[in-house]
Image 1 (cartoon, rainbow, N blue to C red):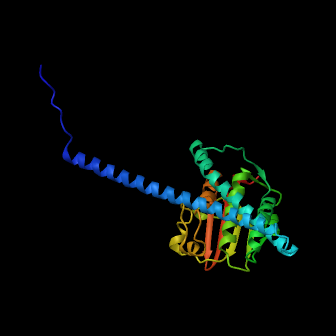
Image 2 (cartoon, rainbow, N blue to C red; image 1 turned 90 degrees about the vertical axis):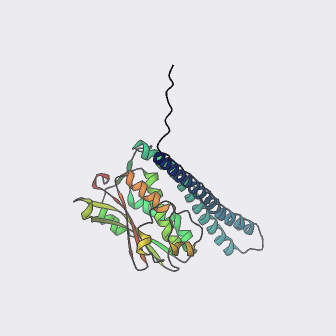
Length: 275
């Protein structure tokens, strides 16, 4: 009986396989490093507000602390609590959005949402945090009346609330002291997006200057600009990434503009989402 000779693969194929194997190994190592760094960052982000709340509660228990000081401590606890809830929602949203994108649909049913009421409620949530830096959040109700009239947004409320919260949180965190953060309703045409009208909500603040090369990367997961990292070393870099993903699910876009130290970010919806 004759035997069938075993043929070895050509040397060039072996070389290609080895190169691919080495590349995959490097990718896995980089992924492991990134994951480890991200988890450490998450732990720090959650620990910081919890420690602040703990310190404030300890101070409230001191009978020597005056009433005015206690009122400020209560405001601080509310502010840090808002930060904590916001962070937890973002981390939860990360996994949920991946599932929604894979399914190609929402896990919750879209509903008609009053954009003005949404903006006012979220602005009120972040106002105590803004006040700590002598900043103020103003919702321009006139623009909402002019742009939306009696129409509503047909959206998943929790998702859009989180996207707008991310814009507000960034504005509060990176704006300059004693400045005003403006929330307005906007409507515009974007030539490269067709002939339709885009309607939504904008958040404008004055603060850090963003380099053009960095501006293009702000929606990348985990990316933070150099000025942002210098002002606040700890950060997740997922706020704008999540906002863009949320808008994509709604067939909308996250639009940003920077002029000097003034930054404007907008959640823009197509006409099909205005009902």
